Image 1 (cartoon, rainbow, N blue to C red):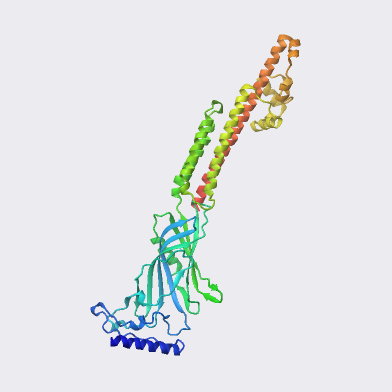
Image 2 (image 1 turned 180 degrees about the vertical axis):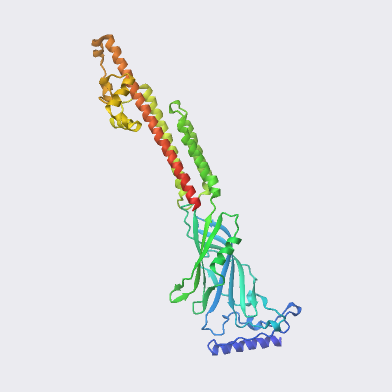
Length: 456
C-alpha cells in the first residue's frame, strides 16, 4: 500500500516537472529485481501504466513516429450494389515508449514482455474508408521490448467503401483504397511510417490470402499524401489494393450455355423454311433463352450495366430478329407458291448483283433466260417481270387469237409466275445467308472478346 502510494507520488511529481519544463523529461531505467520470480512483476511498470493517458514522449514538441503495416489474409465479399469491400486484416503498429527501459543482463535475460493494451497508450489509427463498427476483440496484449519498443497487432474485419467498376464483369479488376490516419493527432504530434516495405506486405498477403474465394489479390501499392482539415494537417498512408475476380464460375454458368443456345439457333437456318418446322423450333429456343436469363439473373450484378448484360441483350435480339425473319420468309414462300407479287426494280437488281455480278450484263441474262425457255422479247434485261405481268393478253385478245394464242399466253404466264417465284425464293435464301453470316460474325467476336478479356 505504501509502495503504491510512493509510485503515485513519484508519477505526479514527474508530471508536474514535465509540465513546468514544457514537456522536457528524461527516460529512466526500470529496476527489475524480481523479474521472472513467481511469473509476475506487479509493480515494476506502475509508473508507466499510470501515465497511459499521455503521449509517451520526453519532449512534447517531438512527434511520435508510428510505423504501421498489415497483412490481408482474406477477401470476404465484394458488394457491387452497396460498393463495399469486406476483407480481413492483421494490423500491426510499432512505436517507442521512452519511459520503458531495462537491462536484460540484470533481468534474467528477459528482452520482451507482453502487456495488456488497457495499460498502455495506444495510437488512434483508423481506416478512413471504414464503413462499419470496429469489432476488434477486447483484452488484447502488446509486446514491449527492453528498449521501449511496443509492437501491437490486432485482427480486423474491415468493411470499406470502394468505387467498383463492373463494366467488364466477370473479367473485372477492382482498385480499392485503405487509408490509415489518426483521429486527433496532427503532424506536429504524430507521424506515420512503414514497418515493412510495400512489396513485403503484398507478397505476404498473396501467400496468405485464401485462394478458394471468388477474388484474388493482384498487388498492393502505397502513397503518402497529407490530409488537410481546416487549419490542421494530418499524416496518412494510402494503400491501393488491386483485386481480380475469378471468372471461371460465370463462364461455365453464363457464357457457355448462352453460346450453345445461340449456336443452335444459328444451325436452325439449315432447316428448310418451306417445311414450317423452323418457326416453332426458334420459338422454343427463344422461350428457353428467356428462362435461362431468369434463372441466372442472381449471378449478375444488380448495379450498373456490365458488358455481359449487353452480350445477353444482343443474343436475345438476334434470336428475335431470326424468328421475325423466319416468319417473313414463310409468308413470302406462301405467296410465291400461290400468287407471287411483283418484285421492285431495286430489289431485283440487288438480287442479281448479290448472286453474281456478271449476271447484270445482257449477254449473260439472255443465256440464262434461254435456258429457262423464255423468248428474247421477254428477257429480264429488256423488260422486267413486273412489266410482263402487267401486259399479259386480256380476254378479248385471247378470243381473237384463238386457242393456239391462248395456250401460248398461258405458257408465258406460267413461265413468268415461275420466274417471279424463283426470284422470291432466291431473295429468301439471300436473307437466310445474310443472317447466318451475322450469327457467325457475332459468335466469333464473342469468343475473341472472352479470350482477350480473360488473358488480360
